[in-house]
Image (cartoon, rainbow, N blue to C red):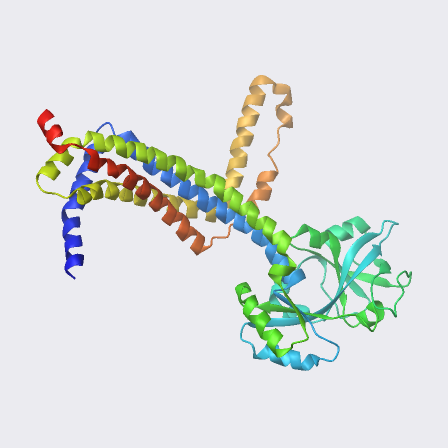
Length: 435
């Protein structure tokens, strides 16, 4: 308690002196240095929060579509001797499991209205998949027709796949070639399906390469020996390791694969892209830290008289160093706090910011084009990419925002600590003698 009390006693004189120095510096030659230091921290924190939030929205759009429509959190293949009902009952007893969906995949070649067959993955699903899997229903955006699998002769296509096949709802497609069990032929002209719906997801490869049929017709289309996989959705994607180990203990002969291993290469590329982008933006803090270090070095030199007086009055060098460390701390708090507020505001209103930026750039381009080449002014158009950027929803993750803000506070704190070491090299007697 005594050491804690003495620490607060030190702050009783350190904080007022630091604030006094700050007020004097705001009116003196160091005003620009202090302002630019806080402004740099503010811009760095704001830029990082906005970049990370938009990058999260961009990447999570892909991840959500892949997880909910394609890969699932955990995929399980049971041996032929396993009881399917026992597995469903076991999953129902696990609190981490949200839903279990059996499906079967086959690679096929689909022909549409014209002779332009396209390769696609044909997935057989239960007719009530949207009722049992809320995540699937959320990511499955039907833009034409309905997602109806009650008819064993119906098929639902991705919008890009339907465009490549030149088919619409109500028209028929044929599965010319299809991988399956040994009791079905590889090539056939009799596997005709009626297009009942066309969907769009957040991932272009799914839109261009997936088609869904009912599990009722899968036995005929894929063959009696088709392999069935059980896709499991979890309450938290991070719980996949624990559930994978539990399934292996309960069903030793089952083949279990998590979403990380199934999509390792793609998700690894997304994470590397995000890390590289963060690395470039973090250079802002390095530049600001160097400027704060140089500014603090100059501040120590300018305050050499006050430092010498404090030393002559008995103040330890460690406490004098704390004056400049506290100065850096307050600079970081001011800059990081403002950057946090502006960063969250811009992230929430990112769509409006992009649309406003597109109008401003359009106005500038139109103005200069009208001045230089008036005959071309009517050809100036708003850049459509800004509308694409505006359609990306920002995803704010509290943990990332906290660490970005903390880094914004620590950068000037470390720079001030390194600069404050110059206090120990000041010759107190010589400085007072000169004064």
